[in-house]
Length: 127
Image 1: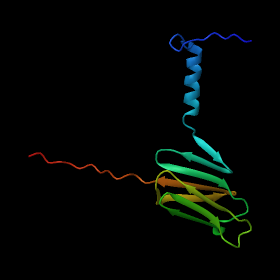
Image 2 (image 1 turned 60 degrees about the vertical axis):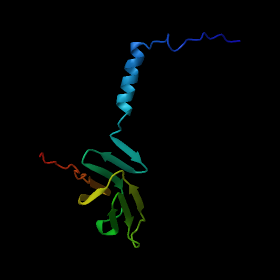
Image 3 (image 1 turned 135 degrees about the horizontal axis):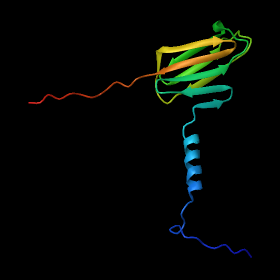
Image 4 (image 1 turned 135 degrees about the vertical axis):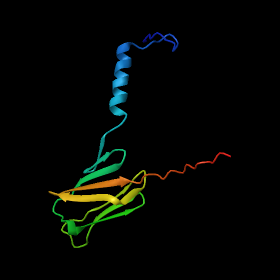
């Protein structure tokens, strides 16, 4: 038989070391800077989202990128030596005109600019 004393929640006060550890873990784990998902690195900031993925053996002419609203599609052409097909659904819309793609040493870097929301504020005239 095991005897464990009951401690009511009102009587428990966390130690300062427990609180410091909790603050450290929440600060470290709350906002990941980069996420890694199946050979793809995703980095975000206020103005853009950057996707980096490995596509060794493929040239610029063998890749097609299409952007439609918040969907980004990457696929290789049918006669490419290696077939790639990826789709990302992003949280917000992407500004295709301000976005860019760069292929260097087998690493494709997509810099996707976020659409700035238009202000819906109106001004009222005072009579």
